[in-house]
Length: 152
Image (cartoon, rainbow, N blue to C red; front, side, top):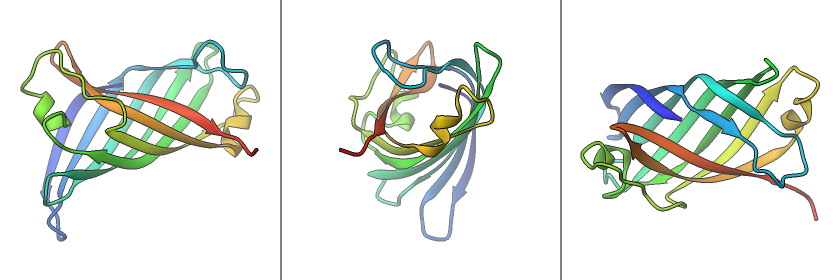
């Protein structure tokens, strides 16, 4: 997903910097060999409510959005997580061309909700993610690999 607008709110009561990012460009794709429900679609709209702590070393992320699948089904997604902020952070990426931070600087707990029968099993599963921020053609984006947690 790529940021299409940034709305800095500013410093909040606990000293954190609050920024709202809007996303309306991007896709969600299931890896080929996955045996569960496959999702192929485009991000319709999404937002990230990010709070960067006063030390500027950590940030909490809260993302919510909707994907429209190739079958015209809507899939709601959300994640909360933690980002390690450093020279590879979204703010730093704004000033560097073609940069990518390493995977693992962003960790998430993900959930999905769907009314379409082909996607409903996603609503009752637990998912975790690992990701990174990227800069492509001047746009900040996020790449996230999501895995389903299964009981052993």
